[in-house]
Length: 394
Image (cartoon, rainbow, N blue to C red; front, side, top):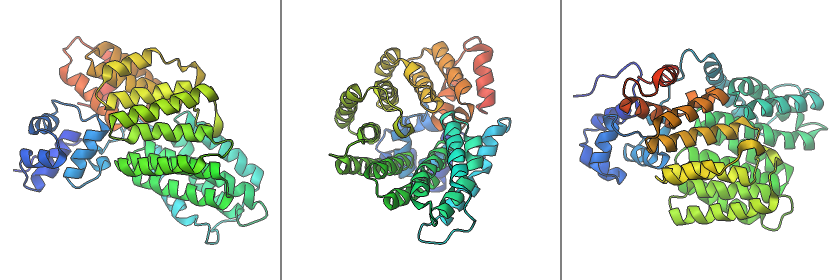
């Protein structure tokens, strides 16, 4: 009997519905995913959070769908900014399709100085996790730069188009549209190739690998990033891009030994570069620590993640789009350690820094749901109930 869908189904309910539509038993589906049938059953029943991206990808592969389809994060109706950001996705997608550098532009080119100001504002908004604000500017910015790239300002316009497409890919990925993020990353690569700059090409490959990682194509992400590292070997000025690519390899690989090796390489490089702001990547010792927290949580080592968080000083990175990962992933680690009050405090801080990001994050939603599942009436109090209400977790 197919379960009756709720108004706002959880990940577990989506998994159960897809399994039953195929007529599969839990044992059969679990064997396809390479996990125990007990684990699959607990996830379906909401007794275990599906907040590990590797497990979610394995379950999605077993059910022949994407992780995003299972996550299906609903934007809370009260979060008008997040709703506005999602409303802008279609326009960005259309712009990315239209800005083929081998085709003529569809709009006249604005002055290059005006485009530069808009680009700077869009990136400022993205780094502050104001995806609605960045998204409102992005489609028009992409079209304007595409037009400028056909005229006398071709070289600066093409280089700026690399950054604009990177912003588009980043915003789309963080709003839960990984396939559209891949399209943005491909346009980023096209522009970087036209610019003929190896460092920008590595930057574009970082966007491509990040989009592949978000799609659950982990092996592809490692292949793209590691190849880009090799291609940047010997090029001056690319250390920050190489370090960021190393961190992405550490995040995407399924091998714990390889992950530790990539992270160690990035950490050693960060000691040499120090804290940087190159290309808005903020590569340096602090960012290595932030990446480590998320990597360790998804490696099922929440104790080490929490220890890493205690040793990571955030002051070196003012950008909200990195700080939110520190607080959200540390909150996930603390929830796994059943330090629920601390976990709630970290998740609320993440929400305060970047509400649009937190409200559209499937793993944060699952962590919040798991906290609610085991909370006694007094645990968490009004703060947890308020967070659950804002995230539509019931």
